[in-house]
Length: 115
Length: 174
Image (cartoon, each protein chain N blue to C red):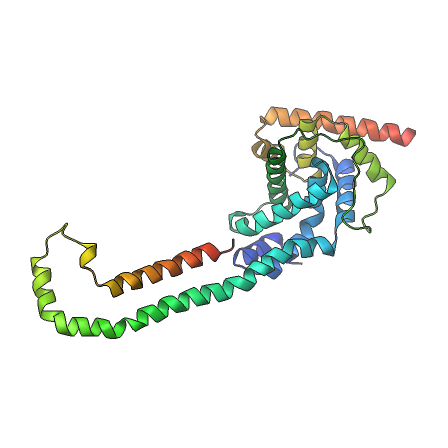
C-alpha cells in the first residue's frame, strides 16, 4: 500500500490512536439496526412468498376446469389468433389477480433484500 | 484469524456474525478516520456508523485488496455527504470540545500532540495525510477517492508528513 513513501513513525502513532478508540458499545451501535432489519426480513419474505404460493395453488383447480371445458374452443381460438391482437380486458380476472399477487411478492422480496 | 476477504464473502451472503467480526476488527481505523476529518466526536461516530452500514449493503462489491483501505474510503465519502448536508465549511476549531465515545479511550500525550499537529494542516492536506498515512491507501487510491490529481495527492502527503514531523519534533524538544 505504502510503496511510494515510508511513514512508519506516523502510521504507528495513528494506529495507537485507533486502538484506543475500539469499543464494544460502538460495535453494538453498528450491529443493532442490521439485526433489527434481519428480524423482519425472514417473516416478510416467507409471508409474501406464502401468499403468492397460496394464491397460485388456489388457481390450479380453476385452471383444470378451464382447460377441460374450453379445450376445444381454445384450440380453435389459438388457430384464429393473429399477432398483435392481445387484449388485457379479455383475460380472466382471477389470472390477473394471481399475476398481481406474484408481482407484489417479488417487490416485497426486492424491497427487503439487505436494505 | 479468518482473513478479511473470507469474512467479507460471508458477510455478502448475509452472515451477520462475519460482518460483526469485520466491524470489530476495523472500527478503530474507521472511527479514527472519521474523527480526523469531522468537527467533533459525535459527528465522527455518526459518520463511522454510516460507513459500516453502507459497507454492509455493499460488501458484495468488495473485490479484495486492503479491506481497511476500502472501508476508510467509504468513511471518507460519508464524511463528504455529511459535510454537504450541513452546508458549512468543515474546519477544525481549536476550541472544539472532543468527547470520547467511551471513557476508556484515554489518549497518551503523543497522541494529543499528533491530533494538535493534524489540526494545523490545511484541509486538503489533512485529508490526504489521513487517507494515505493513517488509513493505508496508496496515492493512486487516494486520488481516486478524493478526485484530486495524483501529483496533488503526492504533494499534499509529502508536505503534510513533513509538517507533522516538524511539529512533533518541536513538541518533543519543548
